[in-house]
Image 1 (cartoon, rainbow, N blue to C red):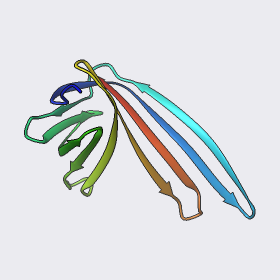
Image 2 (cartoon, rainbow, N blue to C red):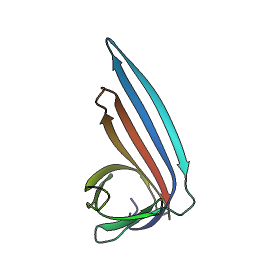
Image 3 (cartoon, helix red, strand yellow):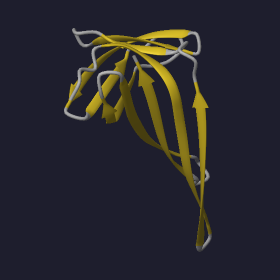
Image 4 (spheres, rainbow, N blue to C red):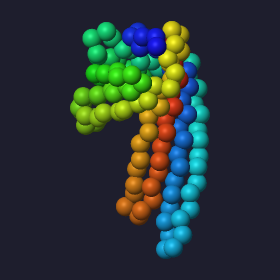
Length: 125
């Protein structure tokens, strides 16, 4: 597998939501996918020392990362706008010039609606 170290420019992201609503004795599931394309303005940098930097939508953030096989863990420190967070991603593809990973997460509202989310992000050097 190629190295993750270096600067990667975001080219696309696909956010897929699958929502399940439970009403009395029935449940309804709906799925929605939204693809967004980028023009080399957003990027992510992985340094050799396990630190990194991300520019997303004009907002810059730093993180620490570990890579164990195909599992990528990004740890973002707390700042004035958000609390500390950890994202665990599955590396779907990594070559010398392209890189794709997926993050899965679930949210449940107080009314019992559960949404399963998959965020696929693609980068190039």
